[in-house]
Length: 114
Image (cartoon, rainbow, N blue to C red; front, side, top):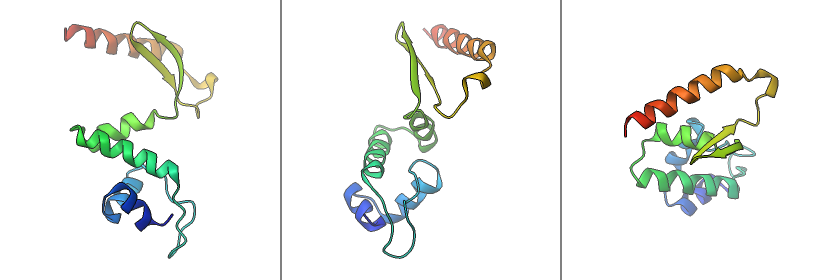
């Protein structure tokens, strides 16, 4: 579908689609050029998710962070907490001790809020 088709499906102006692409929230079109844009259902689904979160009051930067984990692989779910790993990172590149320390600090800070 074209940029205008996608904008119509999402009910937003085409300039907002361009913004979402520029911010890395939506992937770029499969092809570019006048009337050659190739947007697909992935763009529709991600766009709908972004708009739903935005309507709930989330700021664009927060939505971008949240949506960045859409493709992450869940490796642990325990006690209401989920640990996800970016599929693009090599397991050998993970500093396990640093990640565990950061996770512990974040969970303790969250728990301290009561």
